[in-house]
Image (cartoon, rainbow, N blue to C red; front, side, top):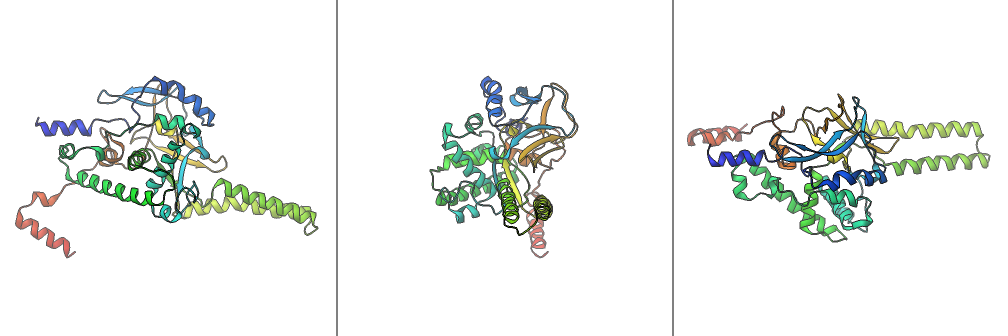
Length: 360
């Protein structure tokens, strides 16, 4: 086998596990549940364990400690302990930490990276400190960190171009974030955080307001009820009926807004990111409205001892998995291969093809 082809196989197959899931020591496997329980993260039927991937490398993942039913909640994370940004939303850190104009111009992944850098900078004062310490210190398996010579060994120009675009996007995002950031933000820390969140984040519909807003509205309804009855403006019966209708309108409005709008929430949840990827898994990480938490469910369930895998996203090709997660999946049903046709045409055919393309 030619040396370049052999090296390409080694590079593309180097990480069957998802980024950062390789075991970093027994401490993580033994201590994670203590801090997870302190954060009210529920994961009663899974444990952190070591596995071997298809290439013999050790990786970290979740194992079922008992049978898990289909669509049973496997991991539940309170929303207050997740890193979350929303479409058009304000910076959760407030204006004193980030200029609102700069924040609004950042992509969702850059916004999440800013939140992660901020939490990491808090050190032990952050409730997420134990989880942050379990994150990888570097992402050597992600192509963005490879040398040009290593990228060339892929012999795959489409992915090389995508990596170049990714590097340019990150550089531009850092410049924008650094301009508006009111705390120390180095390019090294930002680069690390971007790769951490892009290999862990998931997205879903956003209903337009958070739990705090809903609580405030319910409090206002209660205050109006008490004031109206005490002032003699309404009878207790009419007041209760009105308050009930107003309270019921809150979840109904949120449901219809979330179902019909293009608003999105982008989230990184501690512990959920310990689950590895399987394209064949039918999984859902959904926001539980009344619990104000995120819950992981997988269709089909698991037997005791099985590795608990989730799907990182529908129809992710090996190109996407390698670029953002640092691994490829054997027998990936969603895999595609991009062919640069012009490279395989002679000069005359190539010119004709380009002319036709320009005039279509």
